[in-house]
Length: 217
Image 1 (cartoon, rainbow, N blue to C red):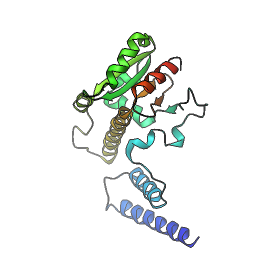
Image 2 (cartoon, rainbow, N blue to C red; image 1 turned 30 degrees about the horizontal axis):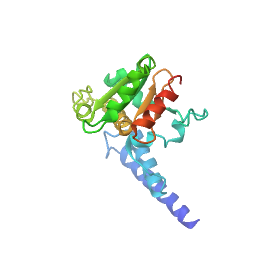
Image 3 (cartoon, helix red, strand yellow; image 1 turned 45 degrees about the vertical axis):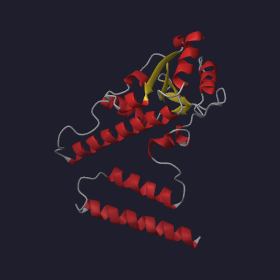
Image 4 (cartoon, helix red, strand yellow; image 1 turned 90 degrees about the horizontal axis):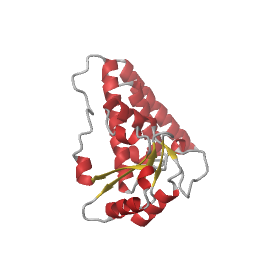
């Protein structure tokens, strides 16, 4: 109990110092939201609740991003984070994934493995193209893909403009990180529902079972 009191007092002290520094002009250029995010991360880290960082935590670990519906075909649909969608909209990147008129299958592949060839072969044999829009990229191609403007194109002239540019860059970073995490196995994205499913482990046979099982999802 004493440790909890000490921890609470420590966090309150940090918040007070940051607030005083910001409003006195010492930290001019940073938004209050930046301090709130840092404060939340600090508290979570100290309490031992943070197990992952970046957009990886959006994939199957954030309770608020889980859909309250029942598990579908042993997979639980999750909500695509709003900042990821905003990152796509403002940068006009990867709109082929989030604005498709069909469910999208997204994954990354290496030229040296057969993951991609087995999935495409299965999809062609079973005519899955009418259910899915396949968006697969080689890892090298993904790394060099022109994903649009991600950072400031000019020096910001006001605090509001700086905050907007910072938010845009942050959302874009979350978007790319989201896709990188999906690419480690495979994601089935429903643009209409703004939800996604993620393959539990990178295995072509399990991937094909997932595609067959959720084609009417």
